Image (tube, rainbow, N blue to C red; front, side):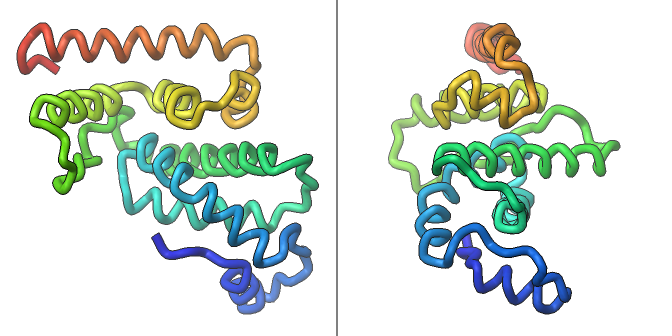
Length: 192
């Protein structure tokens, strides 16, 4: 992952003649924010898109758009969740543009070969990756934000544009579906 700095954004804007929007953060505060949020945001994007290259592109676009927005953020958590909302919308726009692409993402995120996990844990991880890829996009988004990012129901609702009251039943259904996919895989041998 190549770091995306405020200076890079300024250069892009200068080339496009768009320097009319002031930046909310100075370079040092942006760099610190980027260091804390880039890895989890990239993991989220890679998981919901199933494409590491798309995640790289979406990551940089999300930070660029965050820097361009004229919104005052209450605190870092608010800024972080706003960043995830931008990234989610960018990923959805990408899905819409590729309307011919199937809704299911199948195993395009490989398990790290250098991982020192035992064979049984590696197999379980691959099964989870495949099952996760068979979920609908929104189900992947919900589960990732809730369990990988530890976001609250309110934060998930803000990031995905959903009512807070609908998050609990949606998460329940997504967990239930993921569990069913995993049970089908483990109970039925190689059934997917």
